[in-house]
Length: 376
Image (cartoon, rainbow, N blue to C red; front, side, top):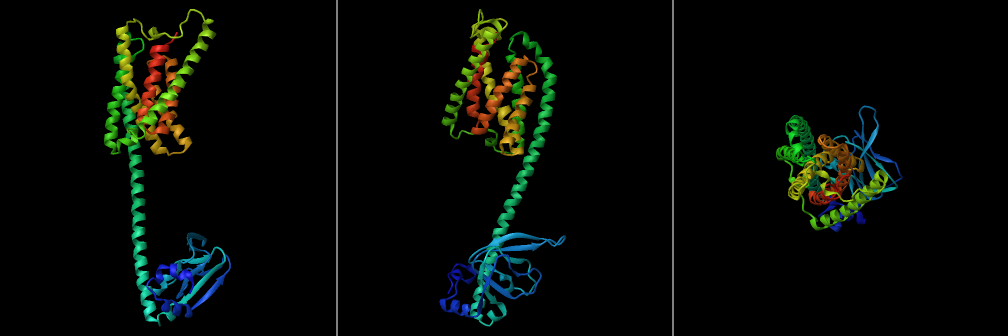
C-alpha cells in the first residue's frame, strides 16, 4: 500500500483490506514531464491519485485556444474526482510538471465494489463542501477588499473636495486677518487662525470618512521609543541649524556684530511677556500642524497611492507642498525652511506611523529655530 493513499482525504475511512483491494483494481502510471493525461471536454471516467511528482491544472482560452495554468497539485492529491459524481466532459486539462507517478482508478470498475465506492463518494462530498466554504470565505474576503478600495477612493475624493473648499475659504479669509500682522512680525496669530481653520475642517473629514483615527496617526503604540527617537533626531537637526547659521554669519557679515542666538528677531516690539505668549501659541499650533500635514494630508495620500518608497516620498513631498502654499503670507525663507524640515518630519512619520514623535520633534526644533536661534 502506497503511503500517498493514507495522506489523501478522499480515502479516509477505508480499512487496510479495502485499500489493498483498491490497489488491485487500479493501475500505476509513470509519466514524464509535460505529459497531458486529462484533456478538457473529453469524456473520461478515470480517477487519479498522485503518488509522487507534481501536476498543473490547465484551462483553455476560448478566444485563442491557449492554455492557462490555474492550479498545481502534488503528492497525495486527487485528480478527476468529479467523475465519481457526474458523467460530464472534463472541465480542465491536467499536465505533469515533472516526472510523476499516478494511481489510475477506473470509476466504472470501482462502482462494482460498492463499499469502497460509497465511502469514497462520502469523502468526496465532504471535501467538496469544504472547498465551497473555503471559496465562499475567499470570495467574501475579495468583496471586502474591493469595498475597502472603493471606500478609500471615495474618501480621497471627499478629501480633495474638502481640501479645495478649505483652501479657497482660507485664501478669502487671509486678507481679512492680515491686519493682525501689525501685532506680531512673525504672524503667529495668523498662522494659529489658519491652523485652527484647517484642523476643524479636516476633523469633520475624518469623522465623515468612517475610518478609525489610528489611520491618521492617533496611535500610542511604542510611544516611549518613538518619543526618544524623535528627541534624538531633533538635537541633530538643531546642531545642523546652528552650524548653518554660523556659516551664514561668517559669509554674510564676516562674523562680526551678529549674534548667533537672537530670540528678539521675530518681534517688531519685543517684551518677555509677548515672547512667552507667542512661544506658547506656537507650541499649541505644532500638534495641529502635524495633524493636518502628516495625519490628514500625508496619511490619506499614502493610503491611496500605496506603500512603496516612491509612493511614500511622493506623499511626503506633496503634503508639504500643499501646506507650504498656505504659508504664502510669511517670508520666502521661512517657507523654504519649513518645507525642508517638513520632509524630515514626513520621513519620521512614515517610520513611526504616529503623530506623537513628529509633534514632539516639531515643538523642539520649531521653538529653538524661531524663538532661540532667530534670524539676522
